[in-house]
Length: 393
Image (cartoon, rainbow, N blue to C red; front, side):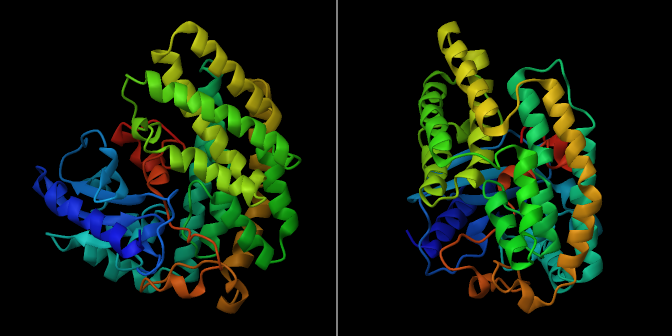
């Protein structure tokens, strides 16, 4: 399927279904489909992120993964209150990239295009960039301050891992790149390599815990995750905001997408999403699976976290959180340097532009990096949208 066909499928779904939803205020594309050239092939492990804005607050549960006209859509509802203040949207490192190009699908009020026309021209300005990467750091510090030792182990790991991975987003935002979800480490590696900051990237991997991971070890745990994933799909009954991500239709993203990274030699960059998917499966198994399946899944998750992240208990999470905070002065210096680099110094990295022209500067063979739906609705990455009732990554 071509990107043009995938976008057309998303637009058709919005017109046929979202536009007749009570309180509909507009819709726009997010994620990688927003910047790929229409003649490019839509990767099978990449869905089409569609954000639907509703006047209601709180919004209804997200529709999630939907197969429509051959495309796998991932539909999320956002409350109108989240996008009404132009300055707030412009400061948000999650939302601002959605209004840097021609990503609006329907806009009956005209407000979404106003956001685009206001945000896009100054998106790359130094002051705007600094405000957005400081928004990342604010989210990081807030999340690491509220880790709960009484939570289940999979919840503890998720609550730590997402903010602990946010230094990658500081790098991407400073480089005027849109932050990706699943591929955040791969994207940050490319930016830091161009900047000659490979040592900082090594430190980011060390803080996650996977710097020394071997490909065979990652593959072993990915194989086990595939089994646990299928078990979670088979027993899933209780609705979670991420339920549509743990389905047979979503397997090509969660499992095949991770396998693609391992096959390409980017196994360390794949660890983040392997653990995130593992933890989601544990949330499902914990409430819906029989005892024997729960125990097997929990053991597999513990082994993966131990081998891939080097973590075994809350004390380890707490110490690693302290180490992440200790990195912030160096990270801020790097961000300031990256954000003031001339455009040609970053020409080897995918770039967000005000006119949807990022394809011309995208690294060969790599997916473009646009803010994904998961982070826009993520508790651990986006405190501003907690009221969406979504309590995830």
